[in-house]
Image 1 (tube, helix red, strand yellow):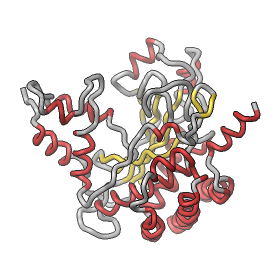
Image 2 (spheres, helix red, strand yellow):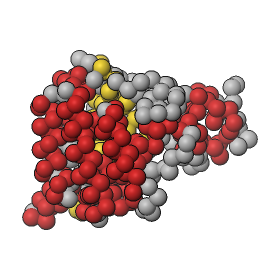
Image 3 (cartoon, helix red, strand yellow):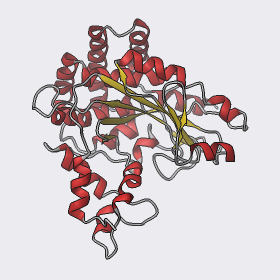
Length: 350
C-alpha cells in the first residue's frame, strides 16, 4: 500500500525540495480574483484538477474565487514578463462569457485562508548551486526569507474585507507564517510540510503519519499543493510575498524579486541591507499590519528598491520594466507607502 512513515515522508519531501541549478530562468504566477465564487460547469470541468493551455503558460483554478495564470520558466526577466503579459488577458473572455469579472483588488469579501479570497503574485527562481557561495542554495534560501517581510510590506494591497478595513495592510499575509530558516533548507521545508494541516483532515501530516492508518505516497502530492508559505521549495524557489498589484503592477514584484536574488551585486547588497532585521521579533506581523508605515521596514525597503533598480540596469533589462520599478519606488517606497494605503484612502473618502 506504500504507507508513509514519518521518516519516509521527511526523506521524500526533503529529497525533492531543491534541485541545484544556477540562476537564470524566471517564472511568474498571477492570481485572478473572481467577482463571484463558483466556476460555471464548463470552466470547472476544464480547470478543476487540471489546467487550460494559454499561449505560453497555463490557467488553473486555485479555489472557487481564485484562478491563476502560470507562466513557463523563461530565460531571463524580460522574456518571463513578456510571456505573462501576453497570457494574462486571454482568460478574461472565458469568465466574462459566464457573467464573471476579474477584480483588480487583491482581496474581496470574507475569507478563511490566504488562498480562497485573496490574490497574489508569485515568482519562481532557480534554487541555486549546491556549493556555498553567492549563488549557493543555502544562501539564497536565507536571503529569500530575509527579504520576505520587507517585500510583503512594500507590496501590501489587501487591507479590506467586505469593503471595510481589517486593521492589516495585507490581510492576505496576516493569515500566513514565515519560518526562521536554518542552514539546511531541505530540512526546513520537510518540517514545514510535515507540520502543515492536511486539508479537511483536522490534523497535520506529521500527526497523520503517526496514526494507525498513515497516508499513502499518493497523498503527499496533493498535500504539498495546499502548503503555501511565503517562501517555498518546490524544486525551485517559489517566493509568494506580494499581493496582487493594480493593473500591470504585477511586473514590479517580479522584477524586484528577481533582481535582488539573481543579480550578483544586488544580492550582496540585499544581504547587507537585511542583516539588521534578522532576529527582530514580530517582523512578519509588522509587515502585514503596517506595510511601509513601519519605519524599520521602510528604511530597508528604500535601500532594497534602489539596489534592485541598479541590478536591473546592470542586467540590461528593458527600459519599460525599469521605469515601472522606478515609478513604484517613487510613488510608494520613498514615501513610506504601499498600494494598500491608496485603497484605504479611497475607502475613507467613500
